[in-house]
Image 1 (cartoon, rainbow, N blue to C red):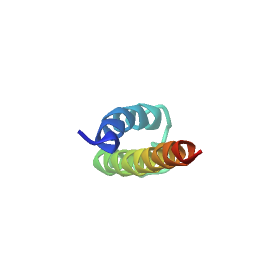
Image 2: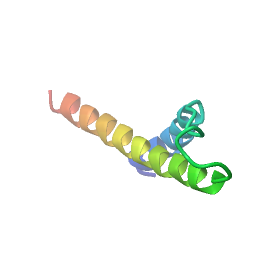
Image 3: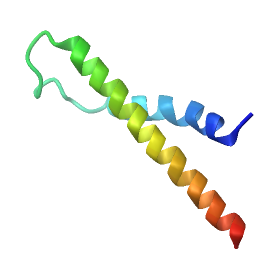
Length: 65
C-alpha cells in the first residue's frame, strides 16, 4: 500500500474535522446547505492534498540527507 494513500486516509477526515469548526453559514444564503457541504468537501480535499504532498516532500528531503 502506498504511503500517500495511507496519508490521504489520515488527512481527509482530519481536514473535514477542521473545516466543520468554521462557520460559513453567514457567507451563504439561507437554505443553501447542500452548497455549504460541497464547499466543505472540496476545501477539505484541497487541504488534505496539500498536507499529503507537504509531508511526502519533507520525507523525500530528509531521506536525501
